[in-house]
Image 1: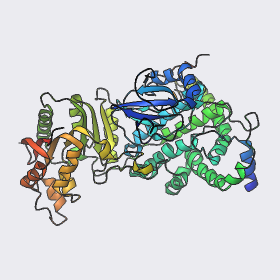
Image 2: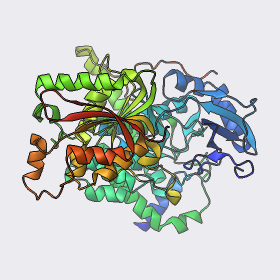
Image 3: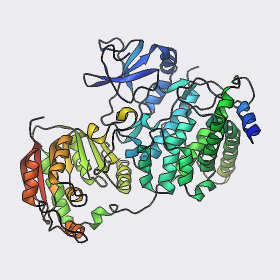
Image 4: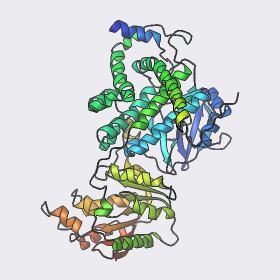
Length: 477
Length: 75
């Protein structure tokens, strides 16, 4: 279908026969196939689409069927959805982001049932973050609800949302990264093995995870036998009533809502109160970053703030960009960042994400292309790398030239802080290990970065020995 | 045990038309818990009614949000 006209299909859009997503001239389109025509027309004309859009649950689209945009065969409608500027994945979200995405999915299903529809999948990848809030992006995830039928996406919801939330809450927030190795969610039997005994004392977790895993294993053994039986009709006994289905959603929502984020204190949680920056030098650094960001005639679509901690500098950059992707290795810092985003008056164009730069999110799924890697998604206009270089070079032995190459691949402009060996943070890092970093000097730093960048300006951060640079990638745009 | 599992699977529906495999065990479990969960919701509603007689309490469902209304589908 796609190959006929050589459209650039989005690599994750291949499972659902109802349609697919593709890119043309830099714009994202969604094709609705003929086979889904009847359901899609009911979805839009029956009011569900409008209800979900008005609530801010579902991404709005424009019908461009009558346009000249090329499309695949068997095209019923062509839609141009509102663009999501940066695609993020569940393993890059903090606990509360995943929890908000879970509640959104359940709310959408509750509204859908009211309108005679049901979500046919409950993949966490169908949720993205736009203006600080989760939003559902898969317009074709709805099928007609048949009274008496169960929720076909119940298993997927438990695997994609409930299991990782329970593991993050009751075991360790770092287990959120487990979703990276399990693209269709955490297998429930694995979740059962990892969860502590107290999870069995929660009626919701006992039912939706422990008992669910038991049922999966029991009926997996009987799959062959049950498939040979005649399937029940909708009028036979054992129907799941609409109120029963709604009650299952209530139970899932209560279970999700009762899970609280882990209060674990991590290395970075108190970073700003424990650094050697005085109040004066923090203010000086704020002012300097602001000054460097004000590049005349330069407008930023996307800024990447790497090692953002709880997003202090992302918020300084936010008024100058359409989006600041604010990334850090520490789940507790990302959680704080997300909570700050909900505060009144806080800029909404900050996207807090978990990212370990020493092993960033890889390309996963089918052919390693279903979910793009961090570097594939990471192209931006400007990269902020404040108080980061020493962690990469001294903490992780990455050569300065390699850091320069990565940052040049990510952004056209770079604002970077060089933290010298005389800085108390670096002194502490080197106190327990041999100094094998003879090139880690101001001269070594500048020489390495001049391979990829033109150094525009450098200033010392007042009250510290650190240097702040702004540089532009060589070779134009 | 096997007989019990087989009889449960005869009671509850297995959708043949989902594009993702919903999982037989997941479907049977929903059939089992739907009644119990519905009873729990009814009990919760009555509990809130009794409670609100004495103290002001909020019985709003987690499935509603601030912008939710009673608006339903066009009939």
